Image (tube, rainbow, N blue to C red):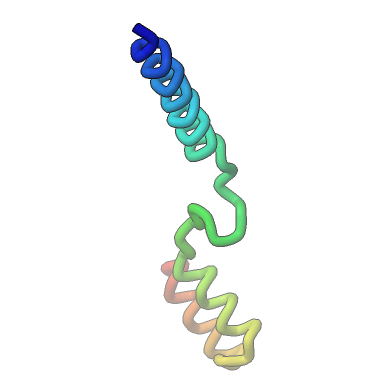
Length: 70
């Protein structure tokens, strides 16, 4: 009865395969580009818009004060 031997060999392979996949998923660093990115705060978005030239310095200062509650 050699069927049991082949079954357990493949069964062992699949256990190893899934363990490697799970370790890879949970051990992936959060700061890789395109993976698990953090959400931007409104102030981060405002700074980015100012840096790209979408808003003026006066608009930036006004909106920043509003966001900070001052």
